[in-house]
Image 1: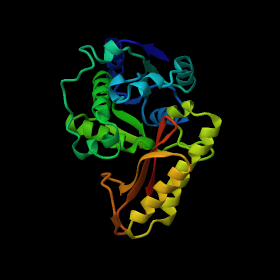
Image 2 (image 1 turned 60 degrees about the vertical axis):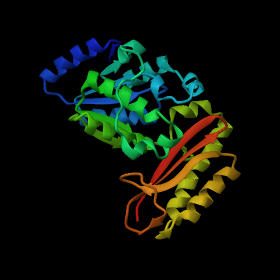
Image 3 (image 1 turned 60 degrees about the horizontal axis):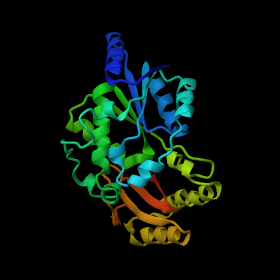
Length: 282
C-alpha cells in the first residue's frame, strides 16, 4: 500500500493509473475504521482495478465542537487494517491539503430540502461541511466509483446531489449497513460506548425492526409515537424517529401501501449520538 500525504502526489500517482484506463474506486473515511469501512473497501476491490481510501477528520461537518474533539482517532490501527485488507493507496492529508484557503467556504451547495429535514435540521451546517470536504477529495482523487454505506442514507443522498451539482461523472455505490451480533449498526462512534451501553443501544435496531413488522397502509402517526415512547422509556434521547419515502426522505404520515419507505432514527445514549435506518418494503 502506498501512503500519500499531499494532494499533488495523489494526482500524479493516479494520472499514471489513468493511462492504463483502470477504474478507480474511492472510499473516503474519517478513520476509526471498522468492518463497515472494510466492506466498502472489499466492494471497491471487486468492482475496480485500483482502490484508494482517505482518512481525514473533517472539522467543517461537526456542528458540535465537543463532538469533533471526542471523535475517535486510531490511525496506527487504521493503516494496518487498510494494508492487511488490500488497499492500494491511502491518502492521509492534513488540513492544509484539504483546505489550502482556510476552512471558511465561499461556496454554498444547493441541497434543497435535504438540508432542512432530519440530519439537516438537527445538525445545521453539517451537510455543507460534508459537501465541502467530499468535493475537495473528489477534485483530488477524481475516481470512477465512490463507495458509501447505507447507514448514512441521507448523507448518501446529499453526495448524489453533489455529484449532480458539480456534473461529476462518478458512479456512487451504496453498500449495506453492517451490524454487530446484537443488531447495533457498526459505527466509529460505538468506540465511545462501554459494554453496557452497546447492549442497550441494540434497542435502536429492535425499534426499527418493530416498525417494519407492524407497518400497514393508513396512518403512521401511532406507529411513530409508539417507537419514540419506547426509546424514551429506555433512556434514549431521540432527535427524531421518522418514516419517509425511501427515494427522497420526505416524511410519510399516510401510507398507500405501495411507496417504498425507510424508517430513520437519531438518538443520544448519554452524550453519544447514534443514527440508523431500515428499508421497508411492502
